[in-house]
Image 1 (cartoon, rainbow, N blue to C red):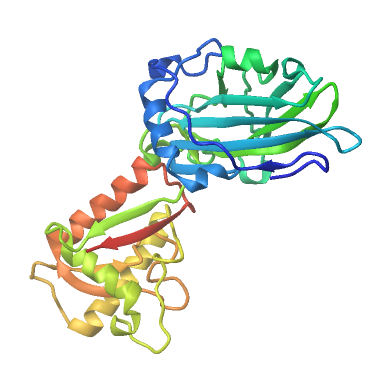
Image 2: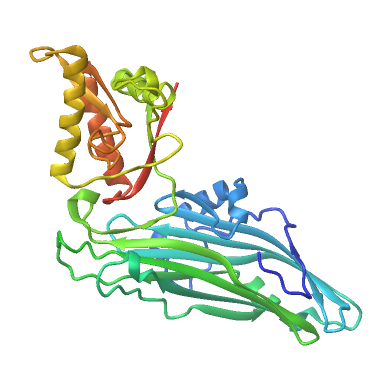
Amino acid sequence: MILSALLVLVAGLTTAGPAGAATPSQRGSTATAVLGPEEEDLRTECATRPEAKTRKGWIKNRFEACVHQPVYLKLIDDKKRLRGELWFDLWILGFTYDGSRRVDYTSSIENIKAKAVAGENPATWKIDQNFSHSINASASGPNPKMTKPAVTSRSETIAQWKAKPLWQLKYTSPDTGKLDAANTQIVSGMVSLEMRVSSPTAVPWSDPVMAYSSVRFDYAGPTAGKFKGTVFTEARVELVMSLKDPAVNESARHILDAQTLPERTFPSFPGKSVPGGSTPLHRLIDKTAQDKNRDAAIATCKDVWGDYSGTKLQCDEYPFASTKEGAAAPGKRFSARLIDGGDNETGGRRLNEMYTLNRILNGDAFYVKITP
C-alpha cells in the first residue's frame, strides 16, 4: 500500500456481512445496490482469505476474484495535527465469463466509522473511488480495445456511501464475430482502482493503485471450449488427479513418481528433474509439435519395455504431449511409462477438460497436483 506522508493506513476492521440478494443478470448496472447469490458466495469465501487484503486480492479461479481490505486512516492537517480517524471495509468482487468478452466488478465501501476531534465535522469528509483501465499491447492481438462503463468514478460523503455502499462496473471488449485461427483477438488488460480521502482541514490521502485486476479477452474458438471468453490471468490453474481414483490411478502414480522421484523414471540420469509440480507446464496447440513429443515418449517406452503392441498397455508421457515441456523438448526432462490404455485415455480426457473449462490457450501456464 502506498502511503501519504501525513496519513497512516493499517489493517483494522473485521468483515461485514452480505448486503442483500440479487440475480447475476443485474451485474454491470450502477443502479444495483444489492448482491446476487454468486456475489454473496464469493464474498463469504473471500472474507477468510488473507490474500484478499492485498492489491491483487484473492484469485479464486479464472472466473472469480475478490479484494477485501479493512482500512484505518488518521486524518492529519498540514501541521501534523490529528483531525480525525476513519475506518471502513473496501470490497471488490470480480467475475469474468466463459462465452462472453466481459468482466464485471461490484465495488463497495462499508462499515464506515468516523471519529473527529473537537471542531472537526466528519460530514464534510469525502471518499473517492476512480476505476481506470489499460491495455498491454505487446501481449494483445492487432487493434486491441476495451470498452469502459459509463460511470467509473464516485466522490461522495460518508452519508452518501452509507446510503449506497455498492456500485457495479462492466468492462467489455469488441470482437469481429468471426473465428480466425491466425488471430485469436486477444486483449490483455488491467483494471485499477485509485482511492482518495479528503477533508477541508486535512491533507488528502490517495493511493493510485488501491487494487488491480489483470484480465484477458479472447476469441480462440474450440481449443478453449466456448468460442470466446474472458479470464483472470493471474489465477493458478491446476490439473488435480488422485491416487485413489481407479479411473486414473496409474496415470496419477506415474506423474507423482516423475515429480518426486525423477531419477527412478525413464529416461534415467543423475540430476534429472521434471516440471509441473513447483514449476508450471505450458499448453502446446501445434499438432506437429505434439506428435514429436509423442514419438519421443514412445521411443523411450520401446527402448525400455520392448514391443508392447497387441497388449492393453499404452505409453503414457509426462509432461503431456500437449505441453511445451513434452518429451521432445531439450533436456529430456520427461518420463515415459507403460500403463493401462483405459487409464491413459481417461487421463487425457481430463486434461482436455481442464484446458477448456479454464480457457487455457497456447502458452498458458498450469500445474499438475497429485493427491493421496
